[in-house]
Amino acid sequence: MNQDYISYIRSKVGQDKVILNFAGGILANEEGKILLQLRGDKHSWGLPGGYLEVGGIFYL
Image: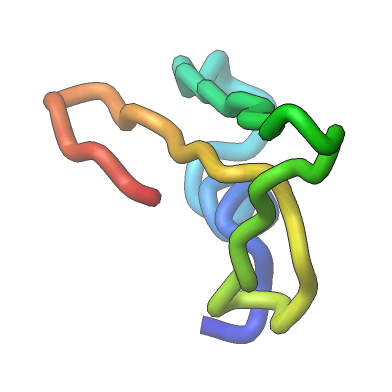
């Protein structure tokens, strides 16, 4: 899929309401360094997290 997830959903449902729940977190050590994850979709660094789609499918 070349589009990001939200754009893909919008192409299917138009402007109808879509329920998405996102969560993320910041984990730091005593030195102030924070944990980052390398995103597989955009190949960039970001905070760890994921989202829950209606129907109970969880994505990281």
